[in-house]
Length: 141
Image (cartoon, rainbow, N blue to C red; front, side, top):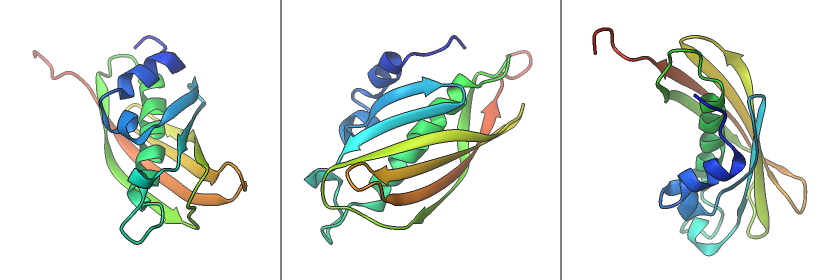
C-alpha cells in the first residue's frame, strides 16, 4: 500500500465514525500516528462525563491507521481481533490527543499501543492496546 498522508487519513474519516467524532490526524508515520479530538457534548455519556467509547474510538482508529502504514507485501488489509483499555481519568472540556506506536509488526498480526491524554492538563486518560490480524487475498480468488 502506498504511504498515506495526514490529509488522506482525515479524508477517509469524513462521513465515518472518526469524522463524526471530530478526530483530526496530525501525524502519520509508520512508527507513530497522532490525532486530536475536541471534547464536546455529543462525546459525553449520560452521566455527563466523556464517554469511554469516544476515547476507545480515538485510540483504535490511530492504531488501525498505523497498521495500514505497516502492511507487509501482499497483505490486503486488517481487522482488529482484540483490544483493551485502561481508563485512568476523564475530562469535561478541552481537547484530547492520542499517540499510537507499534509494539509488534509481524506478517500475520500487529500489536499497537496508544496513550490518550488531555491536552490542556497533560493528564493521561487512557492506556490502550490492540491486536490486528492481517488479511491476505485468498489463493485463486
